[in-house]
Image 1 (tube, rainbow, N blue to C red):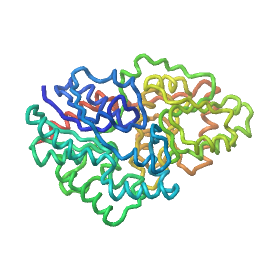
Image 2: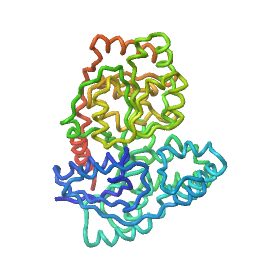
Image 3: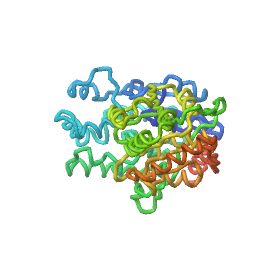
Image 4: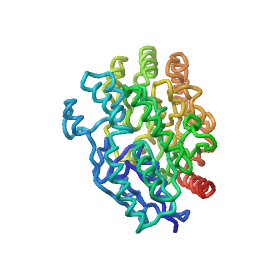
Length: 432
C-alpha cells in the first residue's frame, strides 16, 4: 500500500469545517490503495471540540503529533479575553474594527506572524519530519491550509526530499475575504504574496475547492490549479430519519458569525410575521452551533425572538439529525466583495438531506451555480428584499400544501468517497 503524509492543523477532537475535508478523505484512501499518515499538533488552539469525530478515523491511519506553541495566550491576555475562552471563527474580521488593542493585535498578526500564528511550528516540524521520512518513507505529501503554515512545512520538506507534493487550498491565501482587514504594510503584503507564490511554484500541483478560487490561484504559468470539491459522507446519512416537523422551520448548522449574518432574511421574515398571523405562529428559526451576538440581536430587532430556537454546539451527526427535521436549510455566505468562490462545506450535507436550500449569496457565485445545477434550492442576493420575501411566501404556501420538497439531481458526485477517488486519479495521473 502506498503512503501519503497529510500535514494538517485541524484533526479530531477539533471540530468544525476545517477538520472534515481530510478526516473524510483519509477515511476512504485505504480503499484506493493509500495509507494515510496524519501529521498534526498535539495541543492546537481549537475553536470547536467534537469528540465524536474521533470515531471516524480509519483504523489503518497512522497519526503523528508534536507540540505546537501559538501566541493566542498572549493575545487573550492583551485583549482581555479569558484564558480558556475559545476564539470564535472569524475573529479577525471582528477584531480589525474593534478597540485599539484588537486593532494592534490584528496588525501584529498580519505583519509579523506570517503567514499565520502557527508559524512557530514550521521549523520544528520540518526538522522532525525530515528525520521521520528518512526511516519511514512516503510516496506523496499533502499540505492543507489554512493555516498556510502547513504549506510552508511542506515547502521546507521539498528542499530536503524529492517526494511528490500537493498543496491543498481549502481557502485562498492573499485572496481570502479578510485579507484586506489584516492591516498590512507594503512589506507585510509583499511577504505574504512571495510565500504564496513559492508554494504554488514548488508544489507539483495545487488543488482547491471551487472554480473561482482555482482561477484566483492560477498564478504560475503552466501550472493550472485543480478542483476537488468538498462533499458529504454518505455514511453520515444512513441512519438519519428525514421527517420534517410540523413547523415552518428554517435551520442553520455550524458557526454563524457577523460576516454571514443574513440580514435580508430576518427583515423579510419580520415583515411576513407582521402581515400574516399564521406565518408568525408556524415559523421556527433553528440555529445549531456558535452564533454571534449581532445575529441574535438582529433577529430580535425584527420581532423574531419568540420564533428563535437557539441550540448550542452539537456532535456532527446529532446536528445533522436536527437539520433532517427542518423544512428549509439556511446557507448564508460571507458578506464581502471577493467571496464568489466561498462554498461552505455544509452545503453538500444540506444537498444530501434533500431538503430545500435557501442560500443568501451572490447569484453568480459558485454556491449559486451548484445549487442550480443540482436543483437543490434557491439563491437570493444579499440585498434583494423583494425576491427574498417572494421566495419565503412561496415556500410557506408549498409547506401548507405538503409540497415543500426538492427533486435534486447529480448530488452523488459530491460524496466523499467519489471525491477521494477523483483525488487519487488526479494525483496518480499528474505526479512524476
